[in-house]
Image 1 (cartoon, rainbow, N blue to C red):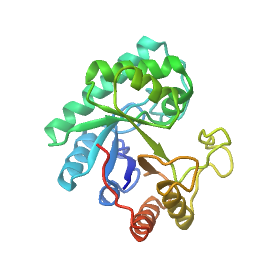
Image 2: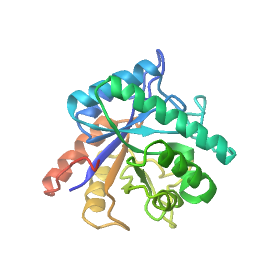
Image 3: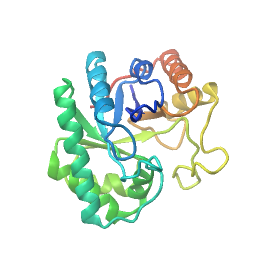
Image 4: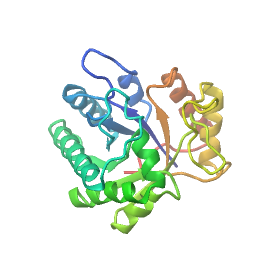
Length: 241
């Protein structure tokens, strides 16, 4: 059994990104943008509402405040400022989700914040502290062995690990920078094969969840291939939260 999550709700105003409606039919958990790297109030509401209709688990996809860079530019924020920004996003996500009939059950940092919190104890502690202060029942989703999950556990939070079948990994287990060749995989068959390998222990670790990026070209085809491959391998896809 494994969860399949995806970053969704990333459209902004008249600018559309990804096919959220189709992806929500293929995944079991949706990481919904909270307006800092992508998304807007209307998009958040529509995404949470559709997720609730389809029975998809939802999480707050918190980020650095970086709409222009899609949250993929690293920022050096003081810990208290980052903590406040995460609190702000959690409040927005939980409030909007509630009116849409959805319940936010987990938190996952996005992009540069995800990568920074994985290795930076100070930034990781700021994120974990914000989550614990807001709602200690929320699960934190992140990379195994990371500072982020260690900080979350230190705050008494439940954690879950994830793997990325559509991303390349460095030798130290971190994600390859997107500027490096091979960082973003685009072949559906390869992505599906890696998803099964993750779920069956054929790679470096067995995650609780697999993440597919909704903004990757061919995202729907990748998700369909992954679901089919997991089913063929006898692996049940179910939300972790």
